[in-house]
Amino acid sequence: MKQIRISDATMKQTFEDFTLSFKEKIELSKLLNKLGVDVIELDFIRNARIDSLQIKSISSAVKDSIIAVPVELNNESIEKTWSALQSAEKPRLQVCAPASQVQIEYISHKKPDAMLETVKNTVSACKKLCNDVEFVAEDATRSDKAFLAQLVNGAIEAGANTVTLCDTAGTMLPSEFAEFIKEQYEAIPELKNVTLGISCANTISMADACTVAAVAEGASQIRCAAYPIDCADLSNVAHVISAKQDALGACCNIAVTQISRITDQINWLCNPSKGSGSTLAIGDHDDSGVFLTSHDDESAVSNAVEKLGYDLSESDKGKVYAAFRQIAERKEKVSYKELDAIVASSAMQVPPTYKLDTYVITSGNTISATAHIKLEKNGHSVEGVYIGDGSIDAAFQAIEKITGCHYELDDFQLQAVTEGREAMGQTVVKLRANGKVYSGRGISTDIVGAGIQAYLSALNKIIYEEEAE
Image (cartoon, rainbow, N blue to C red):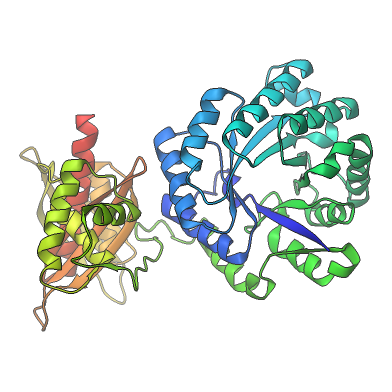
């Protein structure tokens, strides 16, 4: 029975209401890996620093699925992409190129012969770096048959292991798409020696049916999406393959018994309205069972700090390790959350741009939380008011309004550091700017006050570094 590879393209989708934060993309990749997806497709590297760090983070988090990243048709993009991807357990480089004459001329501004040569050279260059290379022929269903055969043969000769043919327009009926796949096997005999993938847009709501029809005709990799967008629906297609595997002569690795629960989590994660604009719409951070001890050296501590998302200088790494040693000598284990607090209080201490003057929080079970915050900047008072989803959220949103700075809230932690009714609370706030994590720490008997101190500490570090640059 043929094994069908499921390639998920959720993170390649870009439209106005669909945005995922840095941390949400990592969480999504973990869920897809758990679901049994064979290939997780990422988008092009557009911002070298942020996107490269994102690819490295996902590569570290995912061990079972192939991580596929597309390259632009030039050597600079290939080298930059491979540099970010090469640490993945199962890396794949994708070479995407238009196959129809309309797209070749009006999108790529090339002639067919020039595109053919460019594809060959790009696939060959990718193959020298990565053993797994996929060629994606976009708009293949509207291409000239003879040219498509040349293009695919050229990519295979250059080293492509997988060839994906796309119905980018998404206007074919299942019977038409099945006939198209059959014709390609007849016109391009070399397709039988590689993995044939397909991708169907859902323009006329036929993507699921066309995908199943392609599997029946011999396609062995199918592009789907776990979140309902312009692509075949992963859940629907996986259930059809599972129910009709005898008739199709095919099966897939998707954990169908878990698919409902995991796709519900994915749908929540990808839903644009999940956070209702709240600053605190962040993922869970679970480090249970992960800790360091006094036996760990500076290298082990530095590696743990990197896993938490920090990119510290050698000087700051030394400061963190010194602070870690002081704590590790007094207790048996130091958790990753405690390491967060160590980094927040020891690394990158800077002169504060913003200082807290006063704050007033109004909240209750019958009114919305309101924060009135006054800060001091260079001797001048600045203030703002914001109504938020809870006291902490209102306070953070008010600071954003005052400073005019919005950064992704990567994590918010609250811990008690003393016991009793007058217990001191410690908060750690992690903000992400340009792909880099900055953390701040605050301690107070007032949870909101501690949170504001921590937020300002992290914010001041970002502003200091941006001004220095």
